[in-house]
Image (cartoon, rainbow, N blue to C red):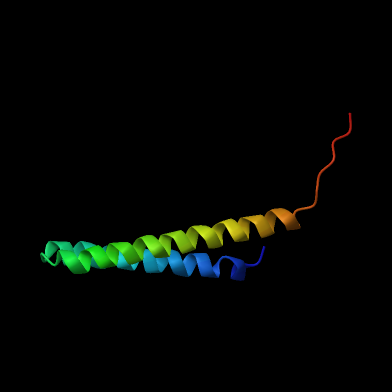
Length: 71
């Protein structure tokens, strides 16, 4: 499988991590409205990462040659 198939998932994971960190910082500063919005974005990014990961896994599985067993 090529590395490029994982690129979208990787990018969304990084965005989610950044949004989570920013949300934690906002909470620490008492800015709960911003923290809530950043948490929502982090969840959205995580969902996108999951969807892209599933797509990449399905593509990898479809490219794997079927194995046969002989008895």
